[in-house]
Image (cartoon, rainbow, N blue to C red; front, top):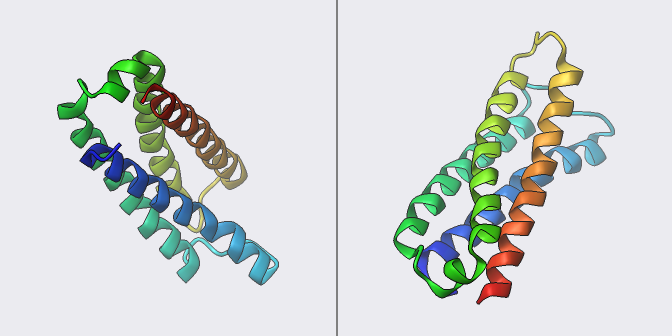
Length: 136
């Protein structure tokens, strides 16, 4: 658990959680959604892009640790959800960057897809973490 891969994984999870909290906190504070060009959404985007960069770093730091007891013990049950989460975060970022355009057509559908990929990311990450923690 003390490997660089574990540290980068937890750092990524923390950044994702911070980015995920910005829209609902802003909505509670303002009583409405933040505008696409607002400061709150700019912060959400910045932290989210940092989280996706951290996910890439985590993925790269995992490679030398694929023989670690947790990785071997968890097997594909731990690695596949992590790989899936990495792919989902790429799509999630793409949707999020589209939502930055103020005059985006079909915004509600894109926003629902953005939320859907966020939920999918949370589930995949949870499965990934639980499998690795149980394995050792």
